[in-house]
Length: 129
Image 1 (cartoon, rainbow, N blue to C red):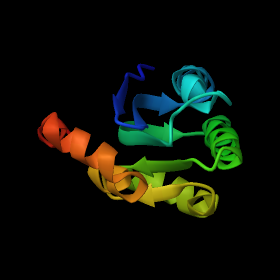
Image 2: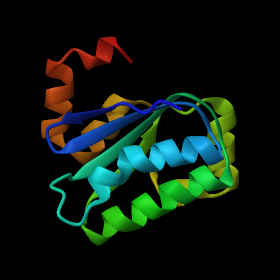
Image 3: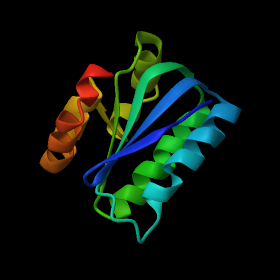
């Protein structure tokens, strides 16, 4: 699994791809780890699920750990662009109560930080997503 990250002002966007199963969860965990550090200046984390076909309980655990770490720092977490099967898994597992679920990355950034949304729009990122 490939998880490139991009910083937009004070928010980090992680673009996950493929299946978030055991191996994919490890890659996702490694990608989000810098944003979860207690001394991180990151105000929010958005995980783009546009290219994710499946998430297992191991992947959901990564989201739960990230949400807890960010809440401790009064930072936010959102997931965006969920495919129908992934949205169903999130709904059934009630993870929409653990992380903010948004239609797309732009909406998620706007909900977390106006500065991050402005930076995202300036880069033309809306054309890539």
